[in-house]
Length: 235
Image: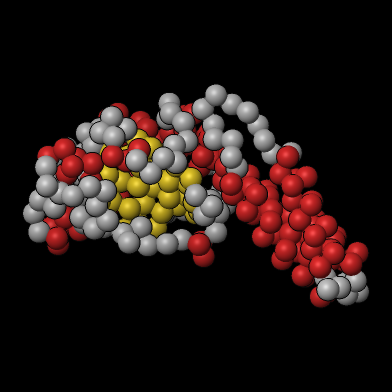
């Protein structure tokens, strides 16, 4: 109970801090989910640390909570900012609609969760059939992402390649890995990204038609604020 009041005070600070981060824009996502989550997590952790390492009183906990909220919110805001900047640079907006990936007109999709920003690059602009060489228009798009990442040296990057089910699993695993590596080479501005070839695992649509197979051929780029939060993109 001694810690309850300072935690509540820190929570109020989260909302106060969160209000400072909203920046309206035509193509940006204004929900700032990661900012709120980061600030809330930081506030709780900061309050606990402040209470345990200070004089074990409410003042120490509140100060710790405020500092934690600010740090957590700043990390969240950085990721939200990256999502919006990348979307603008690629000529699109942040799209968290789960059905967006089923629209063949969406050649690239920028989305975000509480843990990462994802950029999905899809056929037909990426690779010729059986090739791991980026086509010129796709190379230009990926380079734009790399240029923006130079402004965020703390961001951890992951790249995953996906194919359809034409050919053996092993062949497609190798092809998807090579495609992921090709994209990663252009994004290695702050260190080389973690890459993985997923073959035809994690299909977006059943591989039962040419249209659906085209939906499944893609490269996904993941941007994380915390390396420990990285997940397996193939699952």
